[in-house]
Image (cartoon, rainbow, N blue to C red; front, side, top):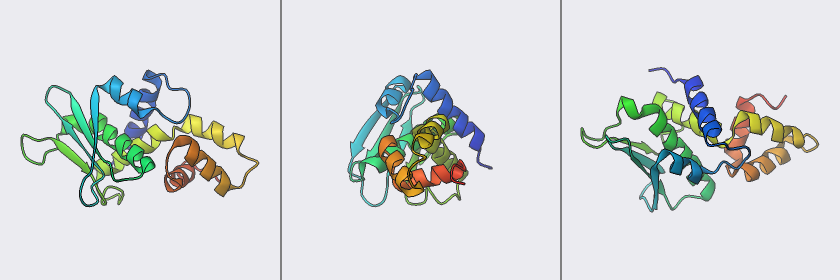
Length: 173
C-alpha cells in the first residue's frame, strides 16, 4: 500500500483546527483529552517507543516509553495519535483480539506505509506548516542552524525532527 501523505497532513491540520490551537508548542494533552485517548507512560524494555490499543468501542490507550527523552516521547505520542486516526478501520492486530500498533526502531525507516503515514502525521501535528513558516520568518536574522535550534526548543521537538521538517517544507533555500 502506498503511503497517503496528504491524508496524514490533512488529518493533523483538521485536528489542530478543531482543537482551536493557535501556536506552538502543540498541547498534546488537550488533543488526547478531546479524542478520549488515555495515555500511559511506562518503562518499556528494548527500543520500543510506544503503542496504541484501539478497542471496538472507539476508545484507545496509548503507551509511551517513559525511559525516552521528553521530545522523543512527544513525537511518539503524536505518531500514535496518527495511527489512531489514520488506521483504526484497517485493523492493527498482534492477534485477532488485540488491535495494537507499535512504534520501534523500524518506524522511521520508510519501509512500512502505515509507519510513514504516522510519521508524516506526527511531523504535521507537532510542527504545523502555517505556524512554522511564520515562526521561521521571525528568525530570518539568524543562521539556519540557530533558527532550527530555536524552533526545536519552541515546538518541543528534536533538532533532527525540526531539521527534517524545515527541509521537507523547502524553507531553506
